[in-house]
Image (cartoon, rainbow, N blue to C red):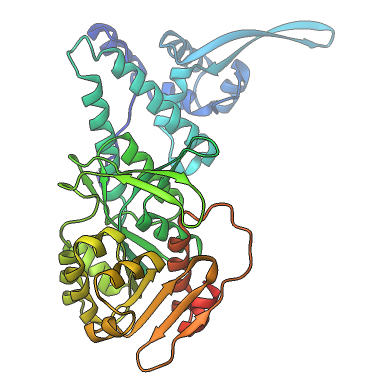
Length: 424
């Protein structure tokens, strides 16, 4: 057997009935032949079945039909038709709900309509879960622990299904739950790094995401959102102890008022670079470093085997509490993106932008200034002010994430840095 797949089937609860069911179903190939004739929502009459299986005797076919009815896989009804002014009774059959699963069991997925496959997977998972949960208390199974294991297993299964190919961009950052309180309560998938990955993917870049996700249904929801947006999640780690960061967005003005909560003992970012992540970064055209641990970023940049576009956009808290570690990364000469608030933090700590940052090793700095646009600093050249287009903004949350993704997109498409900043 080259390949094995798990299948879920419904069987009677009684051991005797279970054995009888299996022996009856597999007693003859004709039983399965009859079952395979049916489509999910179609009805076949006895005469049609006999004609389609004319290589068997009528009696053999009818006995097979009776077995399927006895097993509860087919339902029977009498249809009355008028032929030559005579009313004729016809026995017709259709698949029962359980019969549908056995019907699919013996068919190749490639033969099935994609919409039907979608329904099958969803309905079967729902039935399976409802049956298992009904026995949870009888077997002293902790419901919350069971569901958490289901979520964790699903997360790991999704991640394992991805084979790391050559990516345009690898994003290192975090994923979070964004909660808006105004003008009405709303909940969205968020996290700066995740936002950058989604935006880059929407622009057409093959984007991989390196981060951690909590092993629960919130983590599962956040990860599947990335999958739906086309982001490669094979480099995401599942952390059983991680609590999903929650960011409350209180005001949507400029700048927005946001407060995030997470455990400082277990931050929602990777704490080491795996060999798979390193390989992905070496093969990618660009790397984005967002929220993360400077030691980890340093290790990554030190181990890169070739020169590539590296964009570094340090988190506000990193600059406030770990400035020295952030500055050590500049010796690798990444493209640095900061906003006005981060520029003020550096100034308060005695650093002049851009002069002192150039001395640390960086050669290109972009300072975003909201509706005022951005200032581009290139070592050895005069500063360039790039105005932002005049637009009416409704929600500026994640504007820096969208800018960063767009900037990388344009740079990888061959635009000059000035052109890329202007377009982003």
